[in-house]
Length: 182
Image 1: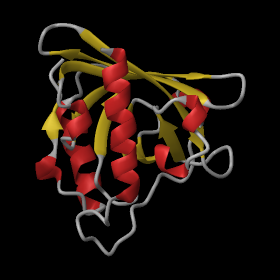
Image 2 (image 1 turned 90 degrees about the horizontal axis):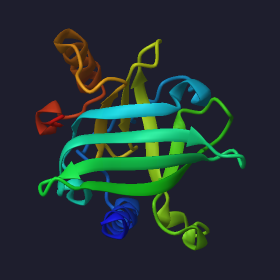
Image 3 (image 1 turned 180 degrees about the horizontal axis):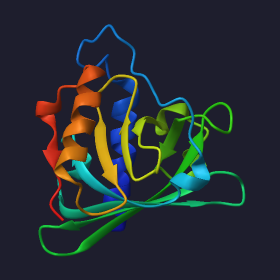
Image 4 (image 1 turned 90 degrees about the vertical axis):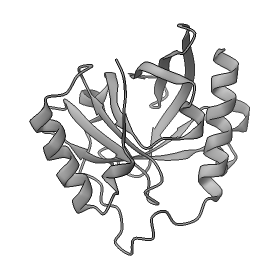
């Protein structure tokens, strides 16, 4: 199961890298001004996402755990529960692009020996984050992918609605969001 999930993630990053401009917006996606990676580490639960083919088998309890590695990259451990009740996991690597406070990261789930190929790295841009580092929104410059993440499995309705308003202001079609079962 882990290998299948990793292959799906790797393939999706390849497709993601070659894809055309998403949603036709002329306005560039804006990230948050800066990211304190140390505060970002830990567990994040998926609250909602734009549907994507590499997560189709995930039916609930989707989460990501970020931890620091000695080389300055981050370990990314994604997991979810599948329809048959099994837990599917995929381990990847994330790296910041630019200065150490950059909110732009790249993530790779392909094997390390392929890391020299630019197309195996997918954009992971933090476009919204509350000051307490409890709710985050992740996307890419083409608006093809979108995830709303929280430190807790459920998100307060008002906080969710406020988050949706900020996403809409960035010209994301929030009607495409799919809530994640916990």
